Length: 328
Image 1: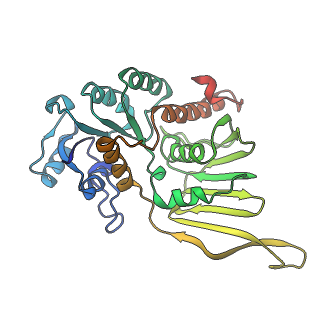
Image 2: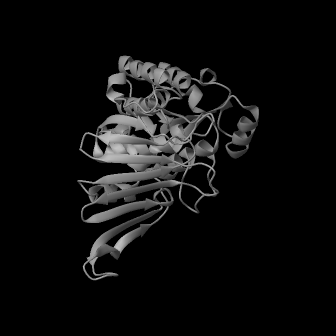
Image 3: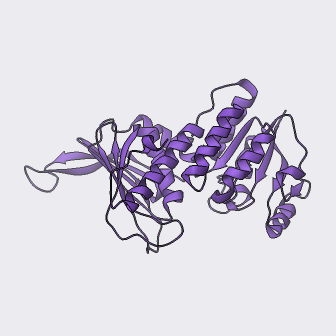
């Protein structure tokens, strides 16, 4: 029997994105329905235009202004895709319905204080919450996770579109692949004045290496780049991870006595980044069989928010080293 699915917030990530990549579900509704294991039982948005658009797409589904307008079901998955400044309140409302799983689009909330409150609420309710850092479920990312350099010398990243947006994805990827971030220090570079700026900072890893994360604005192209430098290889994620490329040293490539990097056969992997279908397959397996549910839980999500808060604090204290775990 299919699992009931409720979507709260009816923007692109919830019911749009149909034309980003032909045939690849990159929205929650497309991915969930593509598995054949879910049925829509409600669509929620405070915006009348979005409700009207959703109704035109799903005329047989209740499209309402609030979760309270939907009847409670004994088993449902609630997905919150609204703006991050209302994540905490909407998640609280969702948890009152005692759903099987709550999924919140990244980041967990818009600020560290509300993330702490939400994490406490999840704990007290003994609920299951996942933050949708979908690269955790992407099959290609998981393949390369198993092939990753285990002892990087340095990781360098470049991102745009804000600390709460692309940077939160990068932090989740970093912790998932390489473990605890012990310290954060903001870099003394110019910071844009947008509501969600893109500052530059350094993460000091418990594993013993540094990660330099450069925020870049003013570009007419997207930036989400990861460059892992290890003693005997370089692993790069380009175009947001759509291009994954591994290079290895080659002696005498240009000059006798010098080694430079060269790409070997089968060391370039090009495909769109997704993970949405895999997320919903995992949720279904958890709901039906009790299999462990992977992904970013409320504890990981809170640590992610602590790192972002550490960046902000370090900026306010002129680059002081801040330990994210001490903020908890």
